Image 1: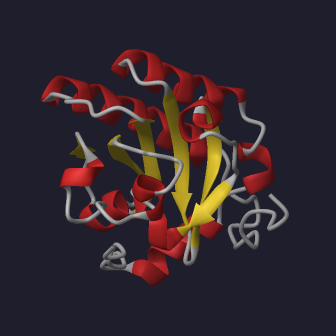
Image 2: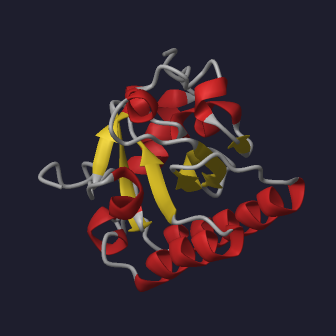
Length: 182
């Protein structure tokens, strides 16, 4: 599986991501509600607010993940991240059936017991327009999502961006990233 390429301004993007007050985001009711809204609006069983770090993606909020992939997890390696492709592309992507997409056909989440098939993700942007991660929905069954569904996902991702702007470190510097025990 080809890993997603790094974002065109990866150092600046990572610095912006690390300015988040991660402890505040992990318990944020608004973020959990937006993940739930995304799953419901697109008729998908799971949704994630995924923040793409240098070597992993971690989930600021998740809904239904355990029911789709068979277990719950707070982060995954970046090399299996579908959301890292959204970050690199800087726009929403839809994958109706990952087994038929060369970017993901041999991804461990597709070929393994997780049996991930459908994915759609929209970028979560910082105040400068840099993608920090993605709001995504997923399913074990192939799904076609139209432009209207992607537009709704993009609007919800913009709402996630607004919530995250309130979680900037008060010092204006890096907080060191998420708790690695997660």
